[in-house]
Figure 1 (tube, rainbow, N blue to C red):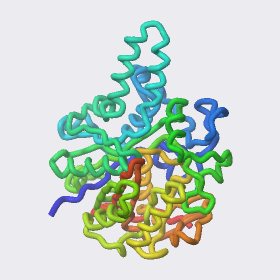
Figure 2 (tube, helix red, strand yellow):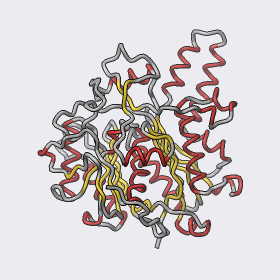
Figure 3 (spheres, rainbow, N blue to C red):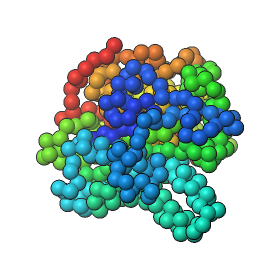
Figure 4 (cartoon, helix red, strand yellow):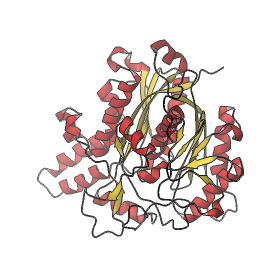
Length: 414
């Protein structure tokens, strides 16, 4: 029997909480981090809201030499990785360097470096600055900075499949552990709140143009009008259950099942692939629909896409048969960082016996979902399903459950 792959460390950087403790407190209480953009003047753009991380001072967490080599996304990821490793009780300097790997995801991040590169083209010495920034940005998005900072010379890679990539990266990390790597740092942190990145996101046609934070991002609501972007995500430390026992590590839970599909080309007449991804994840975990206690939704907030997701959930589990939540309504969609943050939230929810709410949403009855809203819901939780989709037709699903040595509930919230 394959040894379970478990999560022993979490590092969270989120618009509604910097650090796992602050994030979970805000998420449990339904506190939103969505507001008007402050990192640049959004007045001239049709969309002006985002989930920004307040109070992040990179110089307080990272050596000064790293600051000119990195953009905001990379700094957030480095800090999240530091926190995850500390949470797991892993000291990289005490482990063989080839026993540790890094597998992350990237989607919209890197625009800030590119924007700086364009500026540099108009300044003296632009050839040198441009080449230097390109090199640094390359390492930022391919896990290199985390690997270099921590001396990790095991498997290292980056998955690029939009929001689904955050789950795909964790699945790849699980594969590497099963192949013999002892510890893999995985997940994703994404950030693209700069003018260049903003224009690119607007071109997709899925951003909400509401100026009211409580009305802008409303998945599964009759008033859905697109999503609000955000920055941040989560970094997770994965290892085998045997390794966790050997180290005496606290276990958040197990990465139990994974499934991924691609939607067919438009006009093919074939059904979307999300339902199949769910079924693959359940089969991989040896679980059935009745074993799932809560679903963390992708929550596109585009009516046609919400319909596809609601149909897939209903077809697998039945109408209103399983609680569904979208806590990303408090943060915005963080692109490749969104699904790892949902994974972290799922583990915290299992530990606390509490399903966090989907805020500001009035569920449309036609979706037939048991959407958890308002103050959240106390529940007995052992298994959660996290869904993610990406532009271009990517679908991914990961089933997580209380690990073999996972924590029992320490707090119940009503």
